[in-house]
Length: 326
Image 1 (cartoon, one colour):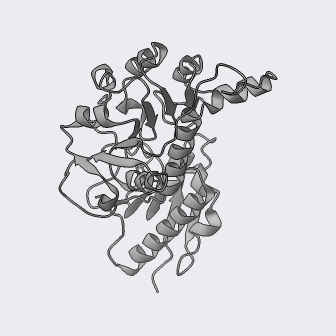
Image 2: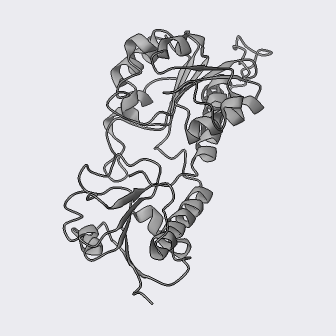
């Protein structure tokens, strides 16, 4: 029998699911990095066969000559530095976040449409303001509105499924509009990636789910936002940089949008201190602010740990890996 694999886990969130990770066909050597200790990730990876990480740098891989598999703990691999994964080493990802993020999208859309932020604040001030007691506005139902998806991967498909349950019309923009595949039966229309403005003009709720690439960075700029109707909602659950920060702030502060839900940001937090952009948008009404937690359901991480354990078994058996990115 071959020797057990040495597996380095450098993602502190996934380390909390160590028992789920260890549910492999046979026992292996597991090393969990303590990122509060400088150089801990590098030390854990030294001599490892498998690296389980949310981010990876060239420095981390200094002693990674034996690594055969780098397994990202989420769908995105944009925090794995270019060149950190040597040629011939498999890079895999995982997912399962779609349903949790879709719930967040619908929740925030309902919060904004039903003025939950405003009415909660009024009630806390002891005010009872409805159309029966004051000059309060009507809220709008999601049913009958059009939801536009910028991107149609796992998240987009999950959002479309829930949106249809709420009676919404769903349209999407994707790289290959005629590709078909899972979830396309939920779509009332599909636009190509060169038809963003057409999708925006038709949408009452825009949900950004596309991956961050050179071509998508800043794609929702001032001109794009100008295509939206003044009651439209913008919900970003992808990456902050897909939307031009200044353009979104200006449109919201000028009342040219109905509201926004921002779960992904421009800049990173310092520990528990939010990036500066959060404070900037906190001064605006009709904006729901969350700390990139839309996919943080416990069930998501249990399923991800199972994916990683399964790929470790496949590597150990010399079989093809699942969800291989490269």
